[in-house]
Amino acid sequence: MNANIGITAENTQEVATILSKVLADEYVLYTKTRNAHWNVEGPDFYSKHIFFEKQFGELDEFIDNVAERIRSIGHYTPATLQSFLALTHLTEANRAPNDSVGFIKELLADHESIIIYLRENINKIANDLGDVGTSDFLTGLLEDHEKMAWFLRGHLR
Image 1 (cartoon, rainbow, N blue to C red):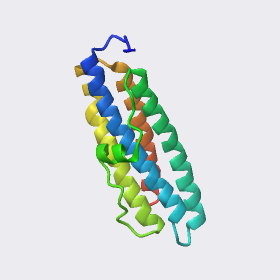
Image 2 (cartoon, rainbow, N blue to C red):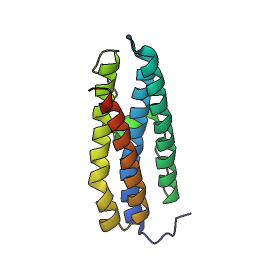
Image 3 (cartoon, rainbow, N blue to C red):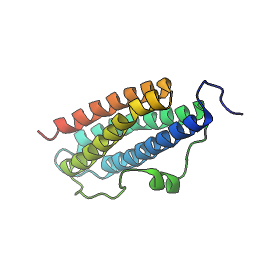
Image 4 (tube, rainbow, N blue to C red):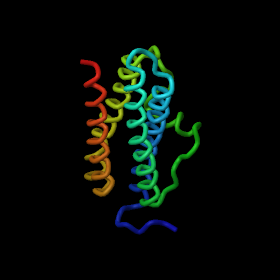
């Protein structure tokens, strides 16, 4: 059954496509943060192990919220690793060593990439596609990523 929410089917499809890319980015970032949690090494191992655990917990909530937003506007979510890798703006490859600084730099770059993508689409979704609910949702998600990026950046000073 189609969602009758005051937005054209074409516009909800475009919003769902944008959200699917966000979902893929979140899932790849979640996986990379889990990798950092599992594989970090060095004298700060324990504190970073706990830090990365908190971050992937937050990302897990983001994933569920984005998927539910896609469903709430009447579309199905991508839900396979293959589809996530086809949709993501990120790379799953780790380009850094298994120390905390390497992981933090890599994760920070990914958060910043997501922030830029969200910022590029917030006004488009509200103004061009008529979906202020999703625009507001993405604004909140943008703020969450900015805070997570700030926490990562704080470890590099």
